[in-house]
Image (cartoon, rainbow, N blue to C red; front, side, top):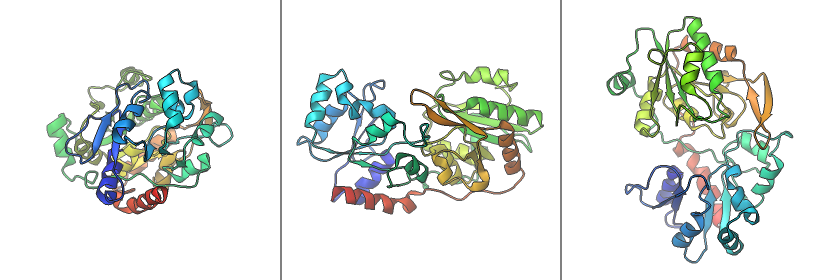
Length: 358
């Protein structure tokens, strides 16, 4: 979100002013625009937005651009179902245009948006998709791929020596490094990841696994998965803490021989970042990442299932096929080219924003 806000400020500051409201990192004085921080994560900024908008736009005019999962914005789409009288009154008098950029990583049972979520999208003035995959599901045609900052995410030739110095991780001769960057949530198939890694281990593939996640205990107990799949966290696996810098992430991506995408993505920042760092990424062919992951690195699901409150389609993969694809990548000496660089995608963003402001 801040990447986009910065580019709007730098390239369109003469036609619009920008500010952000988010749940992530605290405001930074290095950024040349106002940054607000949501106070309550569980309410998805419900109690913050009216006050922030009143501060940023005292006259109430302008555009609120939501970059969020639509399921987390039902309170905005259906304020009458919210217990907050304040929110209901604010929504009735809101003058601002509302745009949304939802991360869509799957469809409902009919191949389109689940009915509740699809109806919620109609409550916004404009809908913009991350990917062509998303556009097929939402039925809205506009697509702007999110950019990756290739001044940060680029191949680091000295990556292995840097991780040895900073993380005390030294690879033996011939030892590969496999990266997994994903949150600990139900739709990320951590069992697929560990089953694949365990098979590679049994097949004699010598590899160190780098895992970067928000927590090792929530929907999945990652430490138990190490043990249950026969991996030694002191030998086979190392974790990096949530919140490390983008520079460190780029170094770690660059140190990998391959990274693994373990679930459908609305876009897939770790996958795109890995590719920009020159590291191949094996990922499923179902999800937003299919727009930019090279075809030979995509794995087709063997079936699918429906899960969650909205019965979202989730792909099911054969772990042996993932393992075979990883072995194939490890057997080749090839690096990837950058994808989704901001320089290449910004013109379409600027065009779409100006059309909405006209």
